[in-house]
Amino acid sequence: MSQKISGFREFVKAALRDPKNVSTIFPSLKYLALSLIEQSGMKEGHNVLELGCGSGAITKHILAKQDSLAAYVGVEIDKQLVQFLRTSYPGTQFLDASADDLKASVADASIDTVICSLPWTLFPQELQESIIKEILRVLKPGGQFTTFLCLHSLTYPGAPRIKKLFSQHFSKFEKRVTITRNIPPANVYWGQK
Image: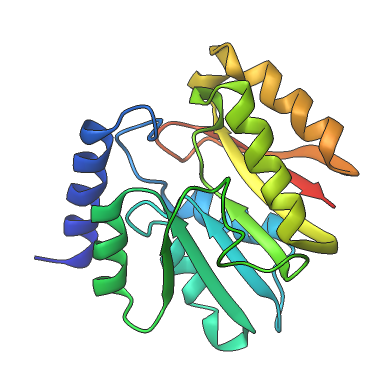
């Protein structure tokens, strides 16, 4: 079985296991992945942190540039997906952790770029705030952050709150582009510490 098919199957199983931590049963398509990377400001020599790796839909595009990166760390809360990622990308560091508690694994001001696929609109405000604080803790001054919100999730109560929190916590924050060729379509957002 191809890695693409098995990755899709693993992602769907994770969505069914824990729908509160997965906003859709579809992994991100390459159009969204490439846009997140492009908008992130990721460059040669950067330390990159990916939050919410899922089954690796975005990970594989980041790791295609791995030779030029100083370091890559992926974070995923679903233990079975972490095992799938470790098997699919041997020798790559994947943490089985919550994005709001990385102190034991990621040093302060050590990351240049954070690329995030978390289902922000499903989270309560306390979790949204604690993840943002953790992102800001690990980012170097001037470090950049990209994430996305699926268009259907913009109607959820958590959507206006998370956009407001992003604007309050990052020195710069803006919507960059809408990716209509994703299932579901999504807005890509960018922030800077």
